[in-house]
Length: 113
Image (cartoon, rainbow, N blue to C red; front, side, top):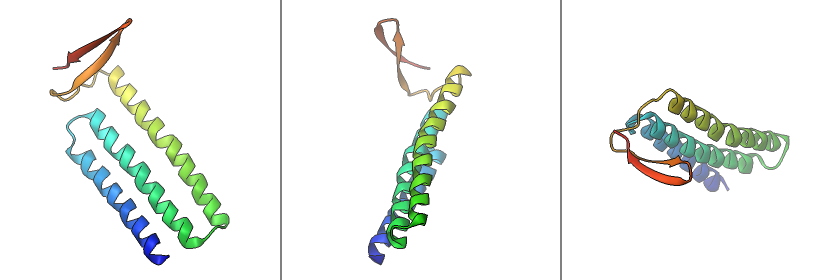
């Protein structure tokens, strides 16, 4: 069981590192928001799952599950709010980004330079 816990925690930390690398390497605000949001959510889930298995089911496990549910809800919501604020402030995309914008009923594909 210790090996399973160690593997879950190791893979969770790996996803945290991948999200951090994505935050540093991606070119614009929108992709920088995307990388850590996805990776940190999965990494946190794996680490907390490992902690629950290590501790056994108890009051601590219930608290960990509540923390996990809270962060699974707030992390994507915060990323969406940040990206919407960036769109309202007209923060530019990377020059190679192709964006799908909706105009009335038609789908308009534009290369945003």
